[in-house]
View 1 (cartoon, rainbow, N blue to C red):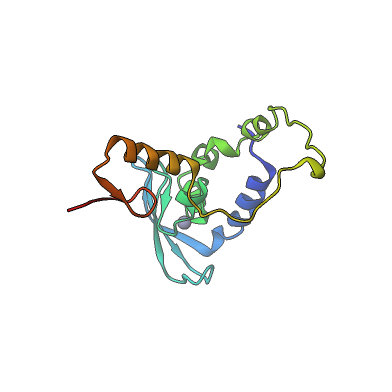
View 2: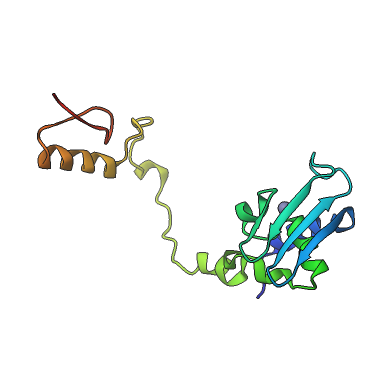
Length: 154
Ligand SMILES: [Zn+2]
């Protein structure tokens, strides 16, 4: 699978830190690893991070947040001779990137034709308003306070 250039740059930047980490536990079958940082990398010197490659998680939180291997996961892949690309979410593939541009983008009309903006709304969504009306109609014995906050009277 081909990945976006941004992902490859991020992975390469993380791989520069591989020599500053040590894998202290390696269970290749379960794809569970423990990785210790040997140098100051992100205010976590001496910390040990539990990596679960198959679940896509690491104690640092980056793996599950960004959906591609963090530096600890990359260290785990390196020690277990596993290819890191299999743990990257398909959203980072070039196919996904190009799919964004598959749709037609209509030309934007001249700004003079745009509807007038009247400032920010109350924050309530139309769906929320519709649901509120629906509750009023179907359950007239309820009193509605805040948006979608239904309270009983008496
Ligand atoms: Zn991590």
